[in-house]
Image 1: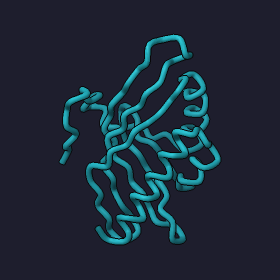
Image 2 (image 1 turned 120 degrees about the horizontal axis):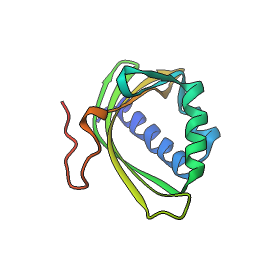
Image 3 (image 1 turned 90 degrees about the horizontal axis):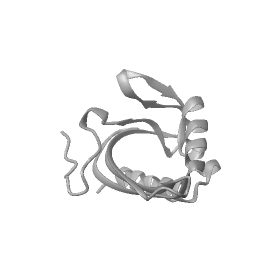
Image 4 (image 1 turned 45 degrees about the horizontal axis):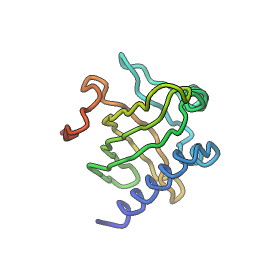
Length: 139
């Protein structure tokens, strides 16, 4: 593993820690100023839209915790692509049974002033959620 890949993996682990702590100041510090998210039907959602929506949504999910498994890393200079499997745990409104989602996600990161920032993420919606024992090996 080269230095850039190690830095990127460390940065992704730190983002996961911020997400699980719901530390929004820290979470936003990992997002590129031009961050966007791919959505259904080819829509791209801006950082200004995504952050408030996720803040609101996570208030509804009690005990939210996320696990991340990095399946693949491709680094090309100051840009990198990660293929990750994310497992999200939580109870909606704290009253419904725990919901567990396992999804595959592509993340694009860019190195800005020596620090990796997430530029783009896209859920592989057409693949649908993964079954708990299903491997997440996309090309």
